[in-house]
Length: 367
Image 1 (cartoon, rainbow, N blue to C red):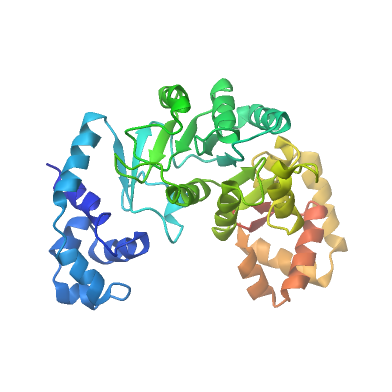
Image 2 (tube, one colour):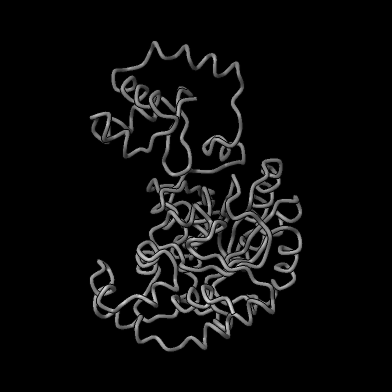
């Protein structure tokens, strides 16, 4: 029996130990086995752990549940991805609440160079379906990994469009890998695995698709991806949670606008109205924002001639970008000495003049 895997599984079962605390423990001890071998007095002294959590670790006695899960993993050839594993998704690892352990059935590279989440309502319109299919089709030459939640509606449409256009696609689910929910998507899930994609979960086998699991699922969708596209959603839809999480993780969020009279687009329109998402009309626009396509040489030459017309504020930002390949918006605000509004105005002008480009994670670079 793999002792380390047993302890990794067990760590996710310890009461009062969530993903944040697990990360603290692994950063300190190096592996899960050492956490359980540690003295209670050492655990108690750790910031973020304390007496109650230390007691939970030392008194944990349900290793039989971890052993049962190991048998399931072995029987169905499930891959496990622990925080310290080389193949653990690096984008997700950078999120403060990244899952301690992931269960994965599939072969898609979760550290691919380009990863896009596409989410939306379960009750899509023909407009939403057609937009999603065209977006994926227009991205088909970009070797992009498409992420979604394997739900009815926009999720399933995005997965199917990816398969049709020979793009790998991964579904993140809010239950164990012993089932597919909704069951109507069982064959879709099999096709995704077979065609180089996969199914991903943080839940043990036997875990039901309870309502409270889906916000947890949504954080994985958002954290795995460079950007999230919301196609159609009610203002209280689950996709709004994904969009909010993606923004909190400093990932770009795109929303497809809809008619003001359409309730199914109310969430997208809200995101756009309050500057929580970039208005999206086509694939080329998305690739431009994310820096996923090369600029024409003639255009670059023209851009460099614009430098002589820069304002004092714009010159300060250009100087920062000349020192580093990429700079985060927070660093620009801090290092430039400009007010947030002045920096934002200067950045916008530079983008409009095609002097700088925005990248995923609110990063900027010179073109």
